[in-house]
Length: 117
Image 1 (cartoon, rainbow, N blue to C red):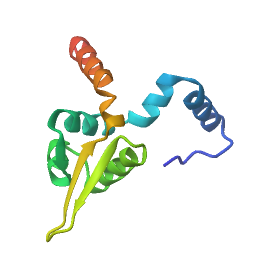
Image 2 (image 1 turned 135 degrees about the vertical axis):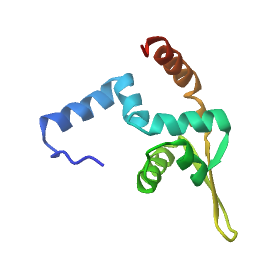
Image 3 (image 1 turned 90 degrees about the horizontal axis):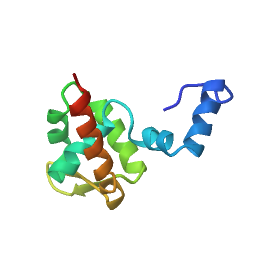
């Protein structure tokens, strides 16, 4: 959710760079505190339920996880599978579009491990 004024300089710059720079666009989709971690867990583990993701994401609230999962689903990176049973079962997995981020995520992880110190 963008809380900036529509015609503010920051908002105009953000829109411009998302439309004209591949890196800015990519970061607008996967950036932030939680999305990369969600994508990484799904990449490494395949399919996870909401509760399993929440346990792995130390410090995330239920509300924030819900918001980030909806954003990733809206952007076509993850798929939500709902099973009609009692209690309801919901699983999340990467789409082909989400799996296309594999090389980027691996390289980001390697770079981070080398430069963490």
